[in-house]
Image (tube, rainbow, N blue to C red; front, top):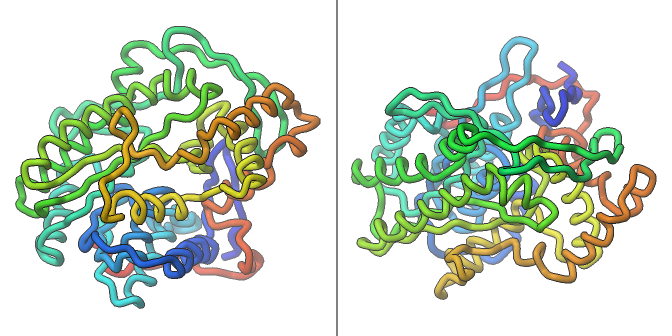
Length: 396
């Protein structure tokens, strides 16, 4: 079939297997051309099919030569429906790993469930024995609690008061104002249950109890803080409350793993185009302005550059890990440089529909959004007939 992008709001309902593979291979080649990383041997990535999770798996495999297990919840193509981009990404990763002689396995299912945890443990025990690095990179709007069966749904809302600021329809370039009503206490509770640290803790405890977690293990989860422009809807809002819970979990896990020489960190990452960030009002406009300024400064990074730097310069540099005053790893350091943020604020105050192309890089934002789904990728013939049914090697 000939696959074209079909959008509905901030999501694309189709994905292109050739384009997704090209994006994965580009990241693989980037890592192969960087200095090798020494440290991780057997790596588990929970939420491994897109964004920072996928990039983490690529860095571990092709930067450190590590064996990997990726856990994700995407589904294959069915009838006239394409598979999700995460499915195509994972298929491309698995093929590249096999060609490189690396052990690599995919576990699909609800990562919040006990069943998926047990299936993953069984693969670790059979194929690796133990894992020494666990990356927690889930980005789900919904969670079913594995013990109680309660269903939680997250929301992206401010807390306390309504929030109004500029936003953009990144498809049309129209700048407008958006007002978001504050979350209720119940919405806050449910968002923390989905996006906080409880499931991360459950994964680590399940691995420990099963005897498949190595001594001196490292685990890391990803977060974002961002600038004052986005604080009301992000860091000071429901998501920020969940990320605070994630940080408290990291403190507990650090003490828990420390008994055997292990460690747990929250890593604050740079703002990037992801399926999650596209859903947050204000954020796509901020990212568009940020991209323009960081590219002009020569300090722009994507997912793969961020994750390579995390592994090579922080987690496995051979030196003590550099942390901020709150105990976090900060690879958003380039984004948060004062002169970068001052330039963003200056442009923000002046932004209108008429000058958005002058003051922002919305063109790149839009292109990267479609690239998440395998479209607008150089070297891909989008008029060619392609088979949407793609198998994933070593799928468990």
